[in-house]
Image 1 (spheres, rainbow, N blue to C red):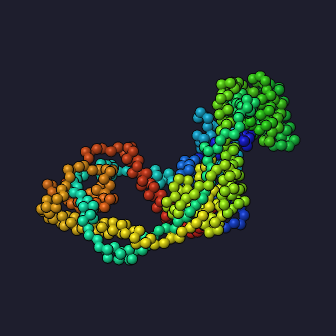
Image 2 (spheres, rainbow, N blue to C red):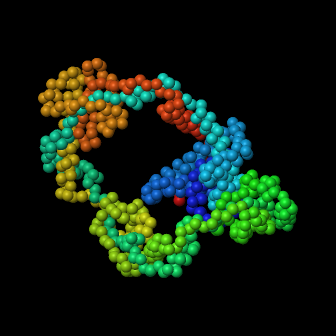
Image 3 (cartoon, rainbow, N blue to C red):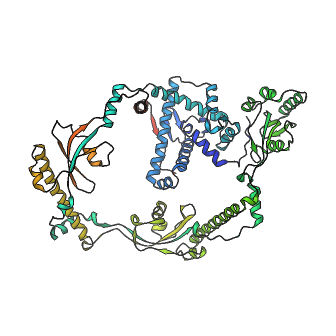
Length: 629
């Protein structure tokens, strides 16, 4: 096949496109030909080993995908060692599960033909332009990820085999009409309720707390009044917004940028060609190509020869025709020969590239339609100024890092080198850090022995793109129990709340007992009253009330059921359930979204049960510490 997209073209875009496709394939654990050596595997599933290299590749794939979706938020999450270890373990667990499914599919004799694999690849949207399979995009994507067509086809085959097994479970599930009707009624059911609120403040404000009680509580619960470890910090912060533009952009520089990036302002000249490729780099391949050229010169049809003689099988089916391309995309020798053709229908002599010998026919030329330089001059100059600012930020970041390292016992020289100031904090606990200092990377740096114990400058810490800082610990105040005088008010409030909760609970339980005995005299005498009746559903915002009333039995006619719950703020709620309202009976189609949801939920449960069963029958061992990075 013709792998001819050059290394520099659209590397990021192609990697993203391919990662969306082979992400699940990378978990397959079938790439034994990619793994080698005698290293200890990440996990072993029966007789099959999941190598560390396979695991790391899958981990990096999923990490890149999550990074593209969640950005800085995901980076922040990964800075937590516990989250990182759990994330890596989840990836390995999925690889183990897929390996179990692969082995079960093999045991059942499930197979996929070469024709099915080829058709699946052709139908992948990421390899298509306007719904038509693009051979060049396909080959470029594989090159970017270090895969040969045969390797990628094997990934696809394994995924399709596994999909057969999973689909057998999914397609076998269904929902019954009675089941859907019952679920519809449960989800649509509402309940009519009234609530009586006993505000915690009414009871805690009346509580009388003596000095003896407060001091006794303080002495018995010292851990509740610990002042956490605190730090005095110095730091130098550098941001891209604070970096001045240091150089004007010359007209010559702007024009040079325009010439080098003309495709960004329209399309550069593009060509569509057909080719016949003979694979190989020896004399025999050359002679075969020369023989094909002789047939063309003798009047043979180019498209027919491409279909029967070209080794590039995908393009051969199209009579050798390739998609549009511009300069800087194809193999240099192939590209130079293509752009040397002048007229439509012209054919080259035999051209040798890194992929074999080619005969190229010019099918069509699409002239450049880029905007003239004058129309985009201001845009280019603004962009180049941003580049200069970014370059200066990068240079200053390096200077900050170097100076902080060279003079590790202060930040004055580092600040002076980047024309910044040394910021200082008073004593502050880790949970009180704010702004850039609250970044998990800063907290992590403060835990390193060099910074925390030796008092050295930290390494440069990236807070966000074009935002870095270096810090040092000036002083540490160890954890200590705060003096009673400093926490007396806190102790008082805590004891008043405790007494208030006891008093509120006592009254609520008394009233509840009376109400369940059909006696509302206590409520009438308490000074509290039920509010107006309201209708609540399972998705109503009154979370505490909803959780209670949907566990209470349906009340008898002309009667109410009563229950107790507590609001988030501590208030006690007595809830009266007066009636239950069922939704109007509705015939639910077996093709409805609800039916699909029920079947999907059941199928997922079946799949999880199958995996659990396979784990019981198969010896699975984990060798990798997923906390490793």
